[in-house]
Image 1 (tube, helix red, strand yellow):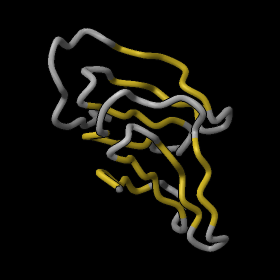
Image 2 (cartoon, helix red, strand yellow; image 1 turned 90 degrees about the vertical axis):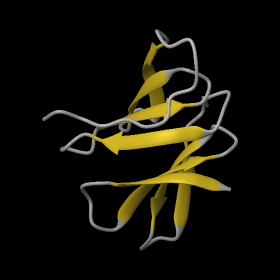
Image 3 (cartoon, rainbow, N blue to C red; image 1 turned 135 degrees about the horizontal axis):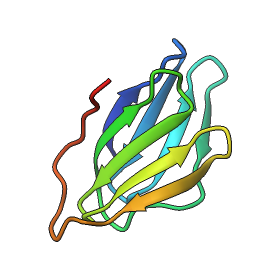
Image 4 (cartoon, rainbow, N blue to C red; image 1 turned 180 degrees about the vertical axis):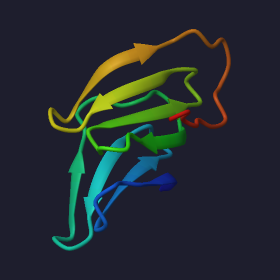
Length: 93
């Protein structure tokens, strides 16, 4: 089940976070779902894309924020300074 959606700068693309902790990019035109290899250990509770679309930040009930490199389709950093679940995430441009 999808728990969060985020707008991607490309008009036909969106980012999907799932209850399982998985993260995917959906290309609506090609009807293709690209999965990232790693995943959170809890429901994804927040998603945001960088303005250029190269990075995604995801927050989860596992207490971690992950930074994903879209070009590499991989997690590039994990921030684990929370002791409890994270409810949402936002960006300051």
